[in-house]
Image (cartoon, rainbow, N blue to C red; front, side):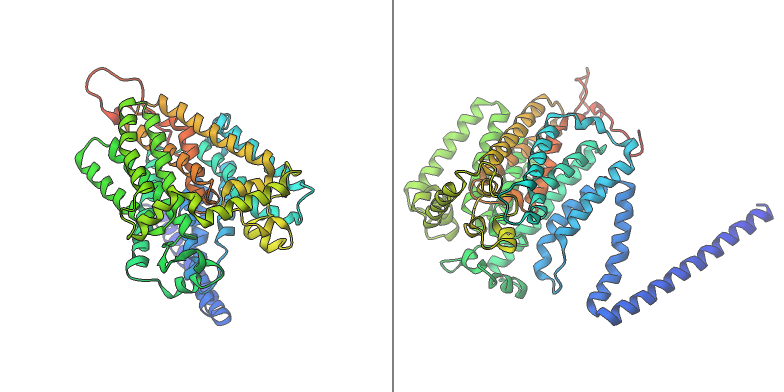
Amino acid sequence: MPLSAISISSNLRSNQFWLFTLLGGIYTIAVGYFVSKLGVPGAVLTIVAPIALGLVILVFMEPRWGLFLYVQLSYIIGFTRFLLVQLPVGLLIDGLLFLTLFSLFLNGQRMEWTRLRTGAFALIAIWFLYTVIELINPEAPYRPAWFFHVRPFSLHWIIVACAVLVIPLTRRDVRIFVNTWLIWSFMAALWGFKQQYIGLSPAEVVWLNSGFNARTHMLFGQLRCFSFYSDAAQFGGEMAGVTLVALIRVFEEKTLPKKIAYTALTLVYFWGYAISGTRSALFVMVGGFAFYLLLKRDVLKLVIGMVLSVPLFLLLMYTSVGSSNYQVQRMRSAMTPMNDPSFILRLQNQAKLKAYLADLPFGAGIGTSTDMGARFSPWHWASQIPPDSWYVELWIETGRVGVALYIAMLVGLAGIGVYRVWQLKDPWMIKVMYAFLAEFVGMAIMGYSNPVLGQFPTSSIVFISTMLVASCNRWDTRPALSGPVNEERLLVKPKPYGAI
């Protein structure tokens, strides 16, 4: 090597050494300052800040990282009850989504913008536009509340839809998303078992004794487990959803080891659903599995499914078998809602709302009910009647026009999903999309009795999975070739990350 090259290399190493030394010194001084001023929160800040900066850079460089982090934060948000300091994880998710959106434009040359010209994105865009128009609803008692409640209604969905469609995702990315969902759900089930059979942690006891949580989570001396989710309804809905997904994989997998593995997961998830005591989550599995059988277009399996399910429903409705078990009794009560005082109270509340909303086709304004209403306009009638349902919440805030438009969007997304899935040829993609679509339909049915569609992590899973189903043809196989079939050989090769 020439002397000049050796000299340049030596100078570069020397400059790098002094640069890192300077940065290390500045960081050490900053750590000392924040710890002396803020104590433990300051120490946490100095650890988290460099990690956060690195993640921001990653999202700027590759927007798919924004989607992956979005899913993780949607689950991590449930752990805030264990922290001594209240962290604004919801605002962090907002910031991450807008950062991802900005990264899409920053990396615009290699994004596939033409995919936005789809019916699925048009449906979500129409719904988003309607919620934007709701900002000028003259009936809203406190208009700034719109900015808080529009996020679960439509804002997050349209950003996620845009990201999922235009980012050149690969089959590997889809697999990561599915596995992440199943792993987080498995850990949630184990945490629920810990609550049921070992006990609650001190932070969970504090949460249970705050507000009305004890009233809704301790029934007849029995705990409704909530794991690390927002509440038992959210936990039960999620467990029912992944039970359905795992059960579909049991039917769809061809090899015995995989069937056994997914059977074990089905049992774990199902018992997680059972200990939640969430009755309406039963209809996620019932409605979702019925939809799966329709997707299969297999009349024989549909008849067999009905024949097997009818005795179970008759057993729950007309006998007392298993009533000594609290979880079985909660499932049985879902079959006879008219004998349930809480269901009767819901009907009475809906009758009151019908009178209030008779002359309000566009509702009382976004942000007027539930927690946002109690926070910003507690004197208003919309904040004083609990909706106890996602669709009733939409009815209060966006009126009969809004809830009709929302349901039409859900039906449209399901219809587009069916059309796309029926065109698929790739075996792995078919079984994954069957599970996504059936779980989405099951969750939409559960929305009648619980607001799970507007809560983390269910909302994040639904926002991503609906767009994956709507664009699943991009990972499909080529037409069948002669000779032995090699699944990987048939795949349409995705563009590399940096391809235009």
